[in-house]
Amino acid sequence: MAMKEKTFTNTELGYSKSADNIQSMKPIPWLIPSKSHDEVHQTDQNAESLQDTHIRHEENTTSIELFYDLFLVANLSAFTERHEINSTSSLQSYIAFFTILWFTWFQTSLFDVRFVADSIFFRICKACSFAIMVGFAVVGIRYNIEDVGSYNSGFKALSLILMASRLILMVQYLVTAWSLRRTKSDSRHFLAAASIELVAALLFLGLSFGFDDNRASKAYAGWFVTLACEAIVMLGMAVLRSGRLSLRKGHFVERLGLLTLIILGENINGLVRSVTKILDGSGSLDAGAVGAGVSTVLITYFIWMLYFDQQIHADRKSTIYLPLWAILHFALHITIVLVGEGASKLILWWIASVTLKALLATLDETLGVTTSISAIDPQTVAIKLNLTFSYYQQDLHGFSEFPNMTQQIDDMLDLPSTLEQATSAKKFGEILEEILNKATRWIFENFQISPPTSYYLRSNSYNVTLNNISEDAADNSAILSSIDTVFVYFYVASGCLLILISILLLFGRKHT
Image (cartoon, rainbow, N blue to C red; front, side, top):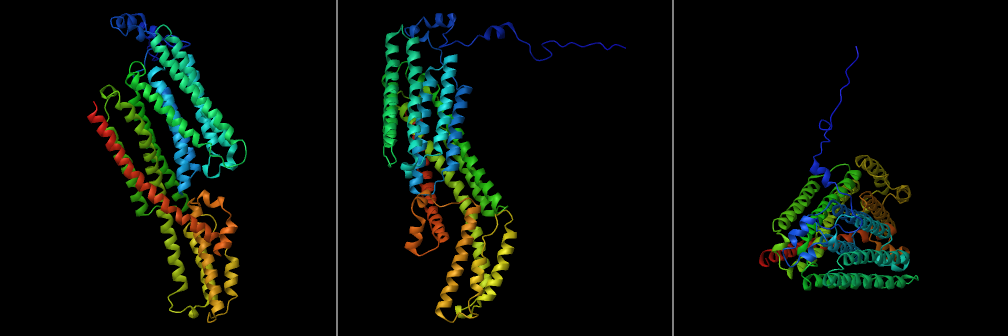
């Protein structure tokens, strides 16, 4: 029997399209899409009709803008993973790189929210902006203001990338000015904006020549002066030219809110990274670590509530105060990042300290309770330590292989059975200290806690010789000192964050 072949209609397959939908599928224009004839006729009834017939603004954030935000956060995540904040200099370096990323995003978004409409030209420009962010990720690997002389090529490349980003913006402003050539007042404003971006690009180009030799150049300071002046001038134009250049014309408030939300998500990502390091090391979480993790999630949630519960629409904000409200988000975002990063590091430190305390308790049990060092039998202690290290390795199954203590154990076995002589007692103490330093360094390494970069920039042999201590002891001392930096910047950033959210709340309520 022949089976009847069933045919499916477009409606059954879910491809039904009305005539209106087909008509709405217009080809993407090459440059700037104009408004339709009906839209133009409606706007011809007011004095701004000529201005409004050339560019069609997007009222909401587009998917390509969100995609660009993800490039920024991915860049930040990669930089954070590679550049740990564990010293004052590394904190300064981190804030400096964040400043470069954020203000590049800021200038690009200033244009996008007000003037970009879907076209082939602007899609090409956005692809170039994506390439700029990829460039930041590449040079971020070799970014270290603590050792500029060794990374001059990376700093020069970064300066050229900044130049390229401003040239892209200049071209976009010029194309927009050309589309508004019939309205001379508007086109002049865009030409002025293009000139500002050209000046910024030339300054970045000039600064790149400061990184030609191997000396520790301070030319990078010019980046931040240029970024600050560029932002001030562009925001000043938005205030003084309150027409088409005003921030109230686009969806800038929404853009800042969405970036804030994405950065809050990055805080959770940092927490997950810390938990992963803990599980890779000890294989378990104690009650303190779980409590700290829950607290970090709650902190992020409370930040979300404090920020988004006070959001209002841009058209209710004063033209003067809106730029101030916008630029405050730079400080807000960097404090959010530092709070999240600090909380994640404190969790990691908590578990490392608990593990270290357990090791010290085990060593105390091995030595036994005694009132005099002369009562200690080095041979017995050496045998017990050897067994203790074996059991400790098995207990921390996620850790790497325990450091080789054969030399220290052999040296301890060579000591006399009693430590009545001062030289023997001193030698025993030195061996025990060396064992403790090696074990402590081993714990830190398994939790991926390393000394600050500034420590490695100094000569390790010089530090060891000067202080008459082993390299492991010097490493541990540098690591333990870094916790002070983490502790301070976490709480300072938390306080600044609350102050900034309060200021933003006052701006939102008072100036409407």
